[in-house]
Length: 206
Image: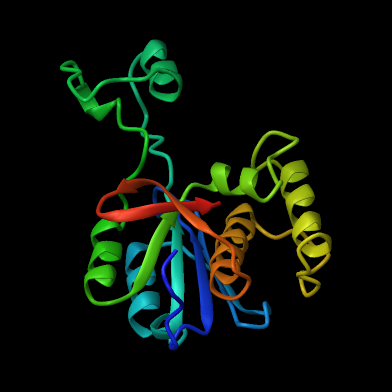
């Protein structure tokens, strides 16, 4: 999607959590598809600092996952409706914003990066896993699912440097996002716009 800028040598993927209580992860891949950085972040300030000061960011194509909004809700029917029912924007009874499915955490930060010239997009973890043939065979983010995803990234997609010990789910999702950006930069993969969220395109592998 678009032409590769001459400055883009790195691909950055971030798996963003919906709160600072859970870990977010960031992965940077170079043009040879080698992982040069894989790290966990927790607080919003740490995420801001990464994008402000990390030297790779200025020369990168970036994508960030959209976390689901798992705010505690009142009433079992609201919990189930939020996940499975199509709700129109016109829905009036929306106490505690219970119809919101996606978290807008750090959205202002990412939009500001775009407005200052960064090549940044968003991605949906489930859609991207499906596009790469990595849809979960087990309950998502369980140890079995993570083991399966890590093995696939290592064997099928060539990340031989991944350790034998288990990486966190967010780290694996960050690698997936970075791999997607790398493929669009250097392997001719097509990125299609699925929808727009908070001013940024949400992309998936075409």
